[in-house]
Image (cartoon, rainbow, N blue to C red):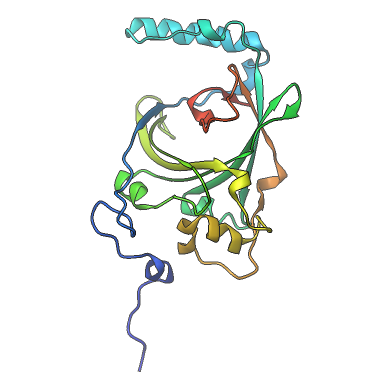
Length: 236
């Protein structure tokens, strides 16, 4: 006799959800940001001045369509640097399942400042599916939820746009109390949303492609605030 058909392992681990709420009764997060993105080649961004050369072009378009745009407050602000590290398993289990996990560290005068920030997100073109993933971490103290609608250019043609819903949470690295932060077991303890993914007891995450990303920002990040670099600045 064959076994009765069963739901996939991931589905069996997902708690039953009532419409409009998470398993603990908390209402689903709602979209609170609209972010419009364009992808630019980095070749022309070679100096602080190049940021403002580009902002002049943006200003002309903004004026044409009666959109408020002002960079005056940034005119005397030095360019700032942030270091970004993306982590994933060797088989890119997070990325292949629409999850992103990264750590950011702001620098001042060449030295890191503040508490490194952990950003965990789930992205999906379906708003409901993105909302139903409970990204809340199990950490002491505060964390910040950001649920954004991102408008991006089409991948394979010029003109038009596509929407992607990004369900994010941000918190300080110091809130992660597990001793082995790169172990999958520790990761699931902090981010229960990842428990739906299949894993082995010895699985770990690591720095993606051994690459550290440098973010160049035309304004100074506040190390005490959980702000999203996607809201401003350029990654080079």
